[in-house]
Image (cartoon, rainbow, N blue to C red):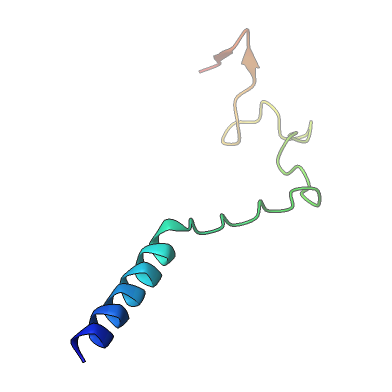
Length: 63
């Protein structure tokens, strides 16, 4: 009886350690081929208008 339970405990211990040794598989990378660029350009009618976005010159904003 003791020998049976010792063997069973050993088998369960080996199974538990084998399960912990394997790494989970990382999630697949998302498919980025169907993305569309948004808000890349501003219509010329809005550039420089007050209250919209000031027109930048040499990397600085106009006040």
